[in-house]
Image 1 (cartoon, rainbow, N blue to C red):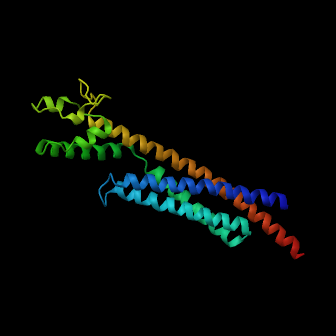
Image 2 (spheres, one colour):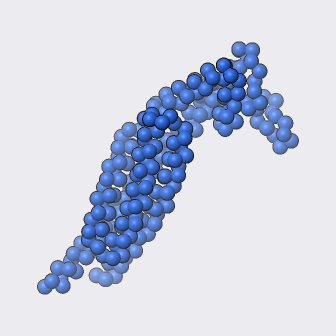
Image 3 (cartoon, rainbow, N blue to C red):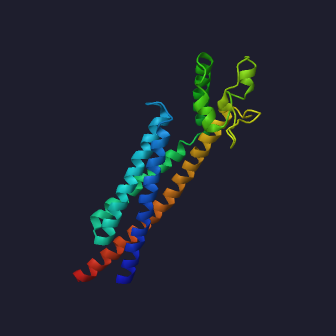
Amino acid sequence: MATIRSYLQWSIVVINTFCVILGILGVVESALELQKYNYGSLDYTEKVVQIIMGVALVVSAFIGCGGALNGSLKLLSLYIFVLLMLMIGHVWKLWRYDESRIRNSVEVMITYTWIEELVERGKMNALQYSYHCCGKRGYSDYTVLSLKIPNSCYQVEKNNKKTFYPYGEGCLLAVSNAYLDIYRAEKWFHVSLIGVEFFGIVLTVALICNLTADTLRYSY
């Protein structure tokens, strides 16, 4: 029984080490993504929820390690409760998964920025530099309006000279694809965490049963 208990204890410690790493990565990623959305918007709120979940995952990892190493039934029970709450949060995120919402949000942002570009040249530069795109739907957005295509629409080569042709992809498509790539990665991140947390619960229940069995045996 002691060997089994030791195996369960250190298995929980190893899992929680991964949870700390994943939780920190989730918080950092969500904090960086938070800057892309307007305060109070639905997307902004979801990123805040993800940050809270990441912090809760890190805290739960320390609770789980403490409970496992000290054989504390109270800490282990609290650990299971926190993991169950986190799993509910992941399911909620997956239930709300909607790529069309991301596309609509990006379209509103790009359209607004493009209108600003028409009023004051240079407003699209940051997007065009970052996502290697040009105009809203393509560089023809500039040419049809007899506007000079900005330097941000061209790739700069090693000799500091820009390419002859501008980027062919419009920023609406480029930014949408970039946001969707992150959104899809987040979906699988939540799925993976559900699996890790479920495994953590199984190990913790097994450890609680082991500790309880020893307590009952010694009571006799």
